[in-house]
Length: 147
Image (cartoon, rainbow, N blue to C red):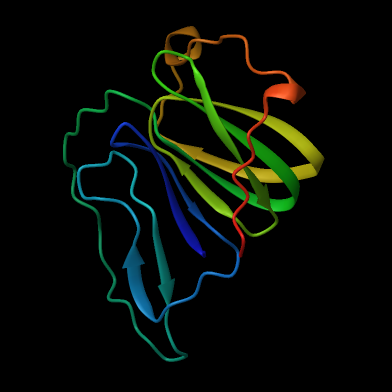
């Protein structure tokens, strides 16, 4: 499955776009109300995207949403609900992209990893996140994508 939405109790926790996703034109994975928008574009040679400027629009961001782009290696993502209860995990590999939309998450590097992180700013230091204890190796429930 090249695109997977991880949910809990009707809430989108993450959207995972696997390295083998492909479609023509422009495709957005996120609903319009998300504070972080994630899309994919594939255009043929010669396509012209009209020059443009983004207008200043005041937005209110309550929760930070972040996008990780895995450039190299393997990363396990552990998902938690808002009550900090562990739910399940997914494995990401080179070329995969994930939008972390809500609730909690943690990571374990399985193979040396290089990745990009993209999120709203400015970073609010201590106010931006609340850390908590994660799971042990024995507790991992890996919902591997059979792609």
